[in-house]
Every structure is written in C-alpha cells, then in structure tokens.
Length: 506
Ligand code: BES
Ligand code: ZN
Ligand code: ZN
Image 1 (cartoon, rainbow, N blue to C red):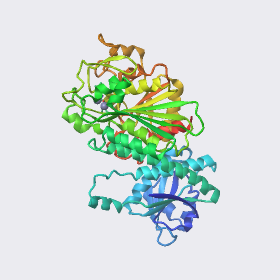
Image 2 (tube, rainbow, N blue to C red):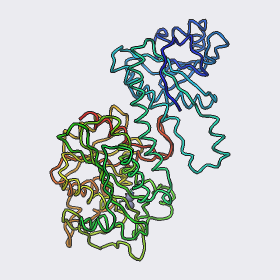
Image 3 (tube, rainbow, N blue to C red):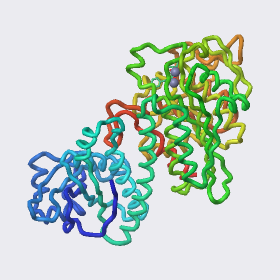
Image 4 (cartoon, rainbow, N blue to C red):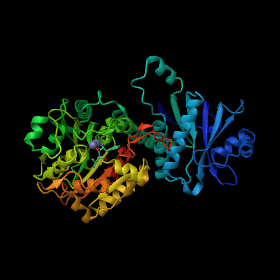
C-alpha cells in the first residue's frame, strides 16, 4: 500500500472512501465532517441520529454520497470524547478503517482528519499514527497461501491511502509523520513475519541471514556472528548447553549500530531467540505444544531485528547493540539433561533442573556479554514464562527492573506506543528459591510459585549493577483474538515500536 499526502479540500476529492472523524458527545460536527455534512445536505447528522451512531471509539457509519461529492462514499469514524484523543485513538481508528475498506473492496481511501491543536508536533504525530494504523491493520501473513488464495486476498487490498491536508505547510508536516510511521510499521511487519514463520523455515541460520541483510543494507550497522565454535571461545556455556540437543546450528548474533555523531551511551537490546521450544528433555506435553505456538519463542529476537531494520533511517543518535542468542531447544541423545551443570560466560554455574526453563539460560550469556561490553543500559525482551501470560494476559508485558530511571523511560515509551507494560516486583526473599547445593544457582525455583518473578530474579544474577529492564513478552508477542484493530492475530510484533520510541527519546 502506498501512503501519500495531498493538499485539497475533502469535498473536492475523488476517492472510493473518504474518512472523517466524529467525536462522542459533541453537540455538532466539526472540521471536515461538518464541511462534508453540508455538501451532503445534512445526511451525516441525520443518519447518525437514525442509526444511533454516537462517535464511540472505532464505531463506524457508512454514507453513500450519490454523486453529491466526487468521493463515492464517506465513512464516519468515531474518535471517542474529544478531550481524550491521543495517538492510540488515531492509530486504532485508522486500523479499523482499513478493515472496513477491505470489506467494501475499496482500492483507494482518503483521510480527512484534523487535530485539535494546530501544533506542528500534534499534526506530525497524528499523521504518523494514521500511517502506522493503516499498515498494521492491513497486515496479513500469506507466505504459505496458494496462488488462488492469494489472488482472492488481493481483491480486498487497499492500494492507495491519502491524507488530506488543509494547506501546504500542514501537508509537509504530515509527510514527515507519514514517513516515520511507514518505517515503524515496516519494522513491526518484519518482526511479525519472522514470528509467524514456522520453525522449519525460521531456523537460527535464517535469523542470521536476516541480520546479514540488515547489516549489508546499512553502512552504520555491523554484524558479528558467533557459531558453536566461537561461542565456546567466549565461554558461553549456558547458551551452548541449551543448543546441545539440536541438529540445527546455533548462532549468537551481535549487531552494532553507530550513529553519525559519536555517542556517549551504549544501549544493549538482548532478545530470546529460541526458534522452537520443545522443552528439551523436560519435554512439553503434546497438548501444550498444540496450544502454545513454540515457534514464536524467538519473538524477542524478532522484535530487535525489526528495530535494527530501521534504526539507521530513523536517525537514532545513541549507539545500539543487539545480542541475540539463537537456537532450538530439542531433546536428543546429545541434549542437556536435568541435573547437568552449566557455566555461563560470567563464570556463574547453573544447576539445570528443568530444560524447559531454557530462555533464562540463553539470556544469561547474552546479558553477561552485554555487561562485558560495558553496556550503559540493557533492555531484554523474552517470551520467558507461561506464568506471565496467566498473570497479565495478552495485552501487557511484565516489566522487571533494577533501575527506576530506566523503568520510567520504558514505561513512558510504552504509554506513547500503546504497547502496555506492567511493573512487577522483584523481592529479594524470593531469591532463596534459586539456591543450589551444587552450583551458584538453580535454573528453576519452586514450581507454580511466582515463576515469572523467579525467572526475572535469575536473569538479574547476570546484569550486575548495569541498569536493566526485562520485558516478559510471552503474553503480548502472540495473540489468537486481538482486541485492538492494529494488532494482527498470531505474531504481533510487540515491542518494536516501544523500543524505537525509547531509543528516540534518549
Ligand atoms: N517459552 C516458554 C514460555 C512460554 C510459555 C511462552 C507459553 C509463551 C507461551 C519457556 O521457555 C518455558 O517453557 N517456561 C517454563 C518455565 C518453567 C519450566 C519454570 C514455563 O513457563 O512453564
Ligand atoms: Zn521452555
Ligand atoms: Zn522458551
């Protein structure tokens, strides 16, 4: 889909579907909605009354224009109460619209939305949110569809989406917003595609090829890949322990983005990259493997690759690193066994009691690596525990941290992008559960007893005093029935926009 900006009055614009915003509880229509109502001889106002359309968030009202204006139809989209309108409202409204447009088989659509404030930043943010919303709402994963199924789907695809500006200056600001929104949505799309791809095709080697493509296309990004041999030299015993059972070669991916002006800050993004989690020798039961999509256990790594695919174009001016331990977790004759003891990169030894708690094992080395590289801050994303899904569901990531300032930054970014986080406690006392008689740590605590917190406490052992946030994204990384229009079913790309927003704010 192409997204463009045009300076023209809504009442004069020819399109399949012209979109106007309506506020809930408002006495009269305002802005482009009022102009169009006039051109259509009051039909928007009348139909709203007749059909009980109140302008609630994402509520829609379709009006045939019957030749009174060049646009074939007008779609009124509810924006909720005027005073509560923020980026998320525009984003979800745009995603709702694109789905309606698909149902109506529109090829081109136009948005005639105006912001309450005429401020440059508000206009830019609205345009960005609309661009994100239409692209994210239109996302479909059709890699494995037959040609016939694909061409059916093609018929319900919008080709052109135009934002109408009231003057040239506003148009230029909107163009800027659209450009950034498109980049952000592209990054999310990449993450979604990676997460949705079955494990047979999305191996650690495939993730390396994605990283290679990113590094080749961006001069400011360099790539270092550690295979089994080189990871052994780095003493990544914990990561290699998990990888032991797999025939698919494991890779530890290290990407570095250096901004043009030398940066004083070094941010590390660590992502769990388990391309399939069978549980290993502590094998998951068949029903669990059927219910949980364990090829999505690399969603943390996927989100970070998404970030890196646009980090240079977005002109982020801090040094950003990605540390992505990528492997399958498989049972086999060579596999890691319960009661085996591993030595992580930072020298700590781990008694493995459950090979299904493998995410924390691979992250132990990724976090140690970040600390060794003198990271100023670490953010890790991991589909780490089923317990976090039970606690927070699919709309919130669990946030665990050793640093208030970093927590605030991440929570702020999450507020802006609508990727919700919920701060969880990390009580010192619970560390007792990780004590081992034979090693520095066990990899699991007492089961069904704060599993998500225990996992975070385990990770904390590997970050030292470096400011760190851990996001347990097991819930929001994959959703079966999304309850917001901008989310696709299955892989969501959760975390991509949040991380970009965080990096931009530094
Ligand atoms: N990848 C899983 C966590 C998961 C479960 C993600 C469901 C998404 C949906 C992780 O590696 C795992 O198996 N965790 C165990 C930990 C337990 C053994 C302490 C879990 O949550 O059951
Ligand atoms: Zn597991
Ligand atoms: Zn896992």
